[in-house]
Length: 624
Image (cartoon, rainbow, N blue to C red; front, side):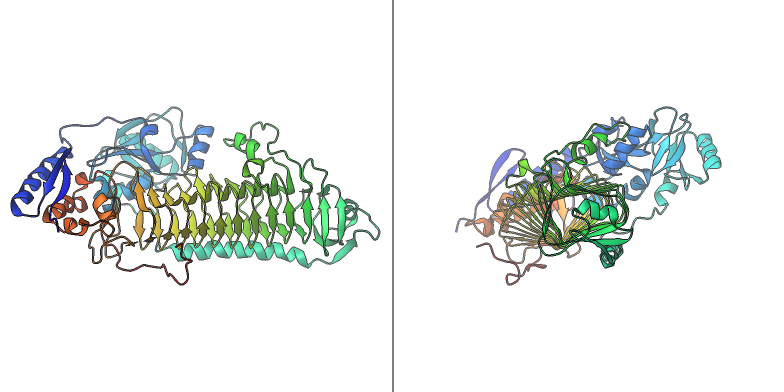
């Protein structure tokens, strides 16, 4: 067998046979290459525009609200020795927690310079939600020289100690120096350790909403359509509050407005058919349920009238939150759609400013071509629960805007654009849904939200299985099979664990330029390309004997580089096993696990697993 291989160092292709002299030569080259990455200690970088930093911390919705209201968000920007981008922290609490984080140091190197927003001379006052109102824009000041006020709302930095003390006297809190603020414990639980508790808590909240709304189904029937009142509308008008209106089998061609707390309950094949323009059932009261009917004849408008004074997101609400729908709940509480079948070219159920809304056991059939349709459930500032329902075709199964606390569980989404689509929505639980045939993605998260828990979902036969952005989120136990791209890892400072990527063209894409995720115990099984990565620093996965399973890793590998041409083909190309075992190759790559400057990109798994963490051939359908 040919014992020679090739390595490329400094743009030169070297033919290597594992012997001492070549090893020494490569080592000398490596010393030279390492030197390229050392930062000159005599240089002091100046602050950059915050928009030019790679940011972590506050959600995009929070930042947009601050901009709209004219508020400031106390921020920091940090230069690292081995990372080419400047890291921006929105919220000094986030800065204090993370600037010395050991796992980031392994990837970015050590902090070499940090600046914080300077509120001296700005007449600052805290206004809640992490915002500060000022009379003028703050400048930047050296973080190590600043004084910080802790305990008076968001942490605020001052270049003047006198200004810091005046602020603390007026709003409370204590003044601390740089070391003091870094040593302050700002409450933020470990994402993975807190996962079970968070999931249980969000599930309990959803369960309570379901119980509260399902009580509406037990109301006594006061009016039956067709007995004394020929239309559903006249029956609703005649019904006393807190009673039910029974809708017997038949076709009712009308639009209905419900302005009192009643329950519409169908019997047999009861159909409410609109005139093809506008919303069919409009709800304007708290405590309304629509159950066991079919609804069709929905209008085709997907945009509403322009809003005035609607806040930072008025154009979004105009574009998405004013469509025609089968059922519309507008600024109500205790809203339920239960076992309803909808045929629509626009939206099935639209919630706008609804706190306790539930969709359960419902089927929404959209348009065959997603570009001609709209949303199955559309939640605008409505932390609703969508469960045990089916969404066929149309644009998106569930679309949410600014609906923090949304729960979507145990649903089926087929052949739309997206199964679940989160926009400006944080603190969700997306659990145990099945999506397939997504033209763009099964589950997609956009606009940098925080604390989303995406757990136990299955996505097949879509362009993208699960596409993520945002931060401090949890992606676990998802099964992504036969997609073009299985997992798009655009989220930052998040946990990816126990996911299965099986038979995709690309198993995962580490697409964020800020390597800051914990990636452990995932199974990469027979994807054409196991993983790709964006440019930038090396992504270091695994560690502490807690890596990932790679079906193409050589048996007994202590370290595996799935983006490396040698490692990725070692089990499929003759001679690669021998070359991978060479001393020169080991030396060339050994430093990328200990020296950040040697990590020019790609992914390295420091503790690859010898067997799958969760994948079971008998329980996960094979793709061959």
